[in-house]
Image 1 (cartoon, rainbow, N blue to C red):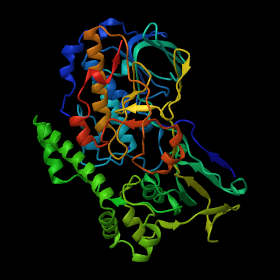
Image 2: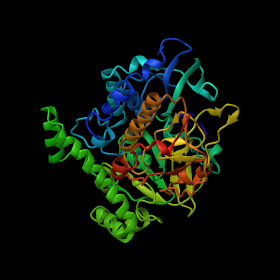
Image 3: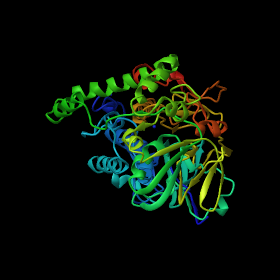
Image 4: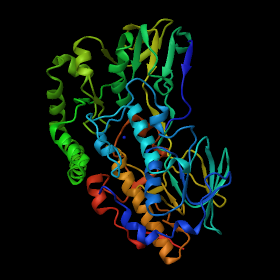
Length: 498
């Protein structure tokens, strides 16, 4: 095997919400002085990660006059939208609701590519003066909460930083998941994980095998086939796949036009409507799986024959028990035979091919693994005084606070929909807590440790592999359309202040 490449790092309201908090917290930031250029900076809030969560948190802190510093391990912002560069990398959520509510992206396309998302995040950071607050190439290795002084001491590769509050926006994916295949060491071609794949690469004289059945594989396959001599998509088992046209409809175009003319309300309503639609589909498909199975069969019946559908597009699980990949151009590629799908277990590699469990041999020069990532919500050591915090099994209230960890906020989106639909709400909720503490003279806030029964909403392989390392979520309906209305009403009695 010439190469087995994996990546060590990787990480799915109103137009100006949160501004009502300014009057309650306009002096919160003055308690400490921000020193973004000093190697040992002290600030009110440290944000870990300059991705979609961190940049959004920075915006809301700034409009509420709360000083902050962002610590970013990479040399540029964007999180996964900076590091993931494989062919077809994009967001599966309609970007009109994935983009921030305070700066909705206007585009003729429903889904945006990695490059477009990265450019959008940079424009947000520039437009709202967030860039000067980011410390790049600063990886957090340990964070310790000093109970006596009610402060976080954050150890990084670029020195020590201190703050009153910590907001963790480092995402939930960590290292790539690389299955072990018998005979891989004898393979004379290349095996590469998508996390280490650059979309600039071409394989015009190579027979490429793409392994995977999730969102990465379905996004990657049509783009990869265009730069490969041949492409075979090998999946252990099928997924439910939904194909869309990437062109926005007339209603969205009209709302975007009105937005450019200063009438922002229609686009705000449309964002809410799309989220309600997504949540209703999520609940409805899980409640009536027979209807959902019929829907997907009807969705594909004009593209493939019934036998092909049964073998390659009929999963063993019910719809929305796992995420549903969104395809663009896959139907056309299948009809033109530019992509061939094989379903089954991989038995072994030979010098120039891979062999399926049923004995079929597939010629292969390059094997690309779209096998996903492992979960890791906490990418650094965390201590409260001398006690090290283990995140596995810990109670995680409303996707915002971990039991027994003071002054720590971890904005977490919903599993089945656009991340920002809940992460923005959670961030504003955290700022309400900070403002309340400032008004009442409190220095620390926490929730107690408690045992929580928890069943993950999805059964995706990355969740099943890492379930023991996951916190236990509670306190919401896990439906942003409802949660954003009823689950984040601030009640001081839900927290312990000191």
